[in-house]
Length: 211
Length: 211
DNA sequence: TTATATTTGTTGCAATTGCAACAAGTTTTT
DNA sequence: AAAAACTTGTTGCAATTGCAACAAATATAA
Image 1: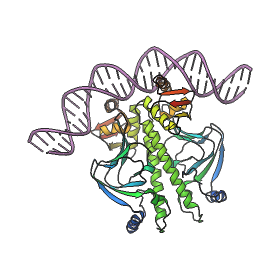
Image 2: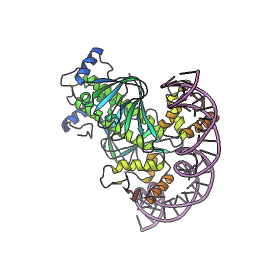
Image 3: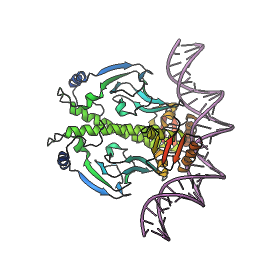
């Protein structure tokens, strides 16, 4: 059974008690607002309670890189990310974020919260999941051509659907940033993939034809 | 204080007891031997006790990708890696590997090992560290040109040394695979970097000149 | 110490890619 | 409903890259 949230398996009432014990604080962010501008030095972790956000970075050439898409229950923070870089988390829709100090999570609770160990375990599962996701991303980015990058990314998305259909979770502009490639070159290659019969597209709906 | 091993802070004697409790098994691998040929379906994790290894993958074009360099205390296994891919772990020197079932690590010990919670905590720290490392790798791979990939990778290596000198932990051939680029194109670019005064090289010893 | 294998260094050439620029289509804001 | 902002689609061109191939230098094995 997959862990979805760090509070999986913990009773609603107990969660509330724990949040007090953790001195957790919730904040609301409007779409396009910056949730964290510089992830370094944040000894807190953030948990997306509702809404979506992107973790992104601009390099010195002004090229944006979308490091990660965050959604409900996603966890972010220094411990989960690259230290020392100009990474920010931007709300892509209105969202609510819960901030908790990292130390509270990993240390054994002095007040003896009985659910603390469940929570630790959940964090462990989420971290494992994140590692798997990062490795997926790495697998895509380690492809040498735009065509291969697209196909391996599409393959990941199509895996969930027996008809091999999926909807891009991105605009094409964002997709290019996610794959770290030039948008126009990517559009050209998508056209080639269509011409060569690898994919069919209808807006952001894509069907993978071959295996 | 950084956690180096999953057994950090646990007494030697207690480790031995735990290993029995975990049904841990140690195995020796000679250089160039395959430690795990297909990481999927392994419900175990491996811990490098001594020696070094590479986690690698060959795509259908025969291009090798070095996913990760493993050394003493590195942990690998299904939970820490991309599922379903043809990933293998190859010894790059003689090494000793300890295998433990993942379940034993995360479940609360029925026999009441008092150090179990320390261990869970250590695993958590190691996972966090791995996430940070993966993000570093992603940062390098998300650069769009070979030059930028090289410079950002060198930057990471040079960060540890005030003189901005470092020795590549790779042969140049392996470096190209690690960066997912063509070796000859990479050599050409390294030459350009030298000509342009960005770096000085002496074999695998490199000095970063500019910032 | 020879033989064998691997790594490094180089080059021409063709293919891929990034860049710049612009038009057309959508969506969002005013 | 009009204006503004963003996304999609397209192209020529120059720069970068991958590929193939080979020689020289090192490292490893016999």
